[in-house]
Image (cartoon, rainbow, N blue to C red; front, side, top):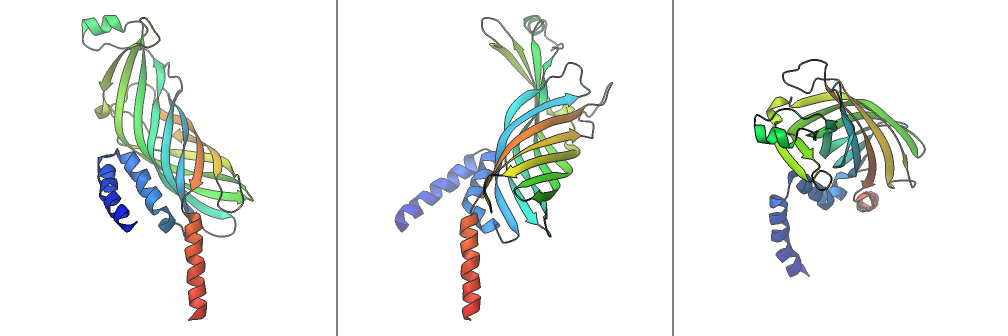
Length: 249
């Protein structure tokens, strides 16, 4: 059994190094989650759906995408706690935008009657005050985000819906830091450290473009999230064994 673990470990490390940043961080969380949980800290994975738009941008409609990250719930006193973490996969932006010139007559002709989906990717770090009413809870506070990717995807219906597309990478047009406020409400499905479900709203407060023209453009959207504590049972057992050891000394 020990030999099997020794052979598996290098393969696992290699896969982590080759994985995307989001996947690598989630895998590390799964491996070491029980070491991050203590009596006053709950650690877990969090993921679900994001529905976003860009407030202040003409024609911007809501776009959807999947999000993934991890969270920390740090107990303070009474029913209060500090909810934070990192959403490592967070798709923002908007869809249904009108096309614009690409500087190429042939491309402009192909996508003249098409549309644009603006895709903005961030690492999100919410820092929220959380108050629990039994299994129901509410949260509010600021959120800081670090942008790492941006693109406009032009699409056009030819034979099938959106079967023609062209991607324009434009990260340099957008600011690195986005800041805003969050409000959320949710419920824990079971007593103790069970799975929780929540809805979180985000309102950006800072302009997302480096060279703004016209109305201020800010991120806006909703997260539908499921949080799953990782390694809580092992952490509690470790704490019980430590307490028993202290009593016998």
